[in-house]
Length: 485
Image: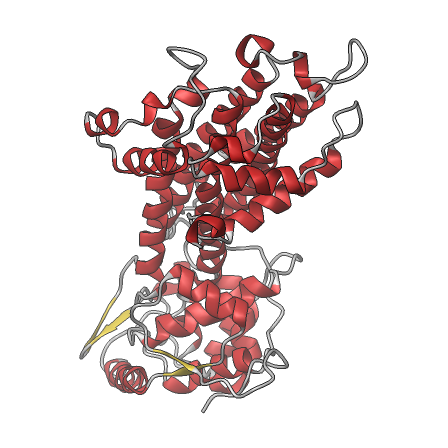
């Protein structure tokens, strides 16, 4: 039975079995965050033992990359040196100086165990057990960034191999390194953050719709049946759930793009976050090692190439850039009396007050960060190891850019939220006046959380409160607790 995760639990917690199948990105992140104890499933243990025995026999009769040969451009150099694995770990542990966060390391080790459990690496179950021990004891090695370009997290996993000690021998070093597990950990965390943030965009957009007295015809089911893009249909359904029954007549026959194209712009981001989740689920359960031990043979291959993940990340970031752009367009509408019939910049008090004028600047500063981090990482090129490796996906770089973009997008949405709530206050709208529309309780949350003082002052604290409110909303279900009873 596996031990507990350090001091995280006060009572006995039964370990979760890691079997190499069916692990979802959300489940993996949840296991990491709760520090749930884990253990290798018995069927996985047998697969690994059979695979280890098979590759040992195969290596007696034919070259096996990394086991009986060098690596990279040294793939044609045969070796029987028992110190080959130790030298490989020592040399490949060359990294940069920045450590990965502990949550990334913990999740990366969990993913690597799950991949090993699928049985294609040729590593013995003792290796998985050793990684499990590090997880359950919360004795995480210090792994560093640097050297990963989407063709395997070589440096960080070499550091892991050194931390595992004697369980890694001269023949098992390369199979341990043959994985993007640490990159996949960062991708899973980004996926969960993106899915959570996308889920609150309709709440912010719904409040802007109220403040701008938008025309809800844009969400009519017949509109989206006429062009049934999957994500668009889902967003429109969500918006109908929030706005149906809103007793406020629309101010215009046709709204500006920020309202009129809301579902058409957020919809692709919904589709792309789903695509990322699907790609991640495949890879965190995959036998992606090179060579792959398949029955009584080994197959040298390119499954270490993380292009599906990198492209999914790039596509998601590009779609989120448009979401951020449309958010800033709604902020522009909210500060314009031609759209709100309120004061310029939603100012209150003395003549020529600035109100939320600076919010628009903050939003565009954040949008500039979104734009710069949306650039596709897959446009990178690399030729390495004397030309033996001509291409890379740059998935690790894409993962870092995605995390940075999501943080900036949260700032953009916080700017919209603060501005929309201020407009609602100036319009003297109360949550009860929005009934029976389901957006009312969310407005009540925002009014309670955000300061009611409308005089000219720094709005920095308001934006920080709004960021926190987005996090709270993201942790809830689609339905507001008040609606669920």
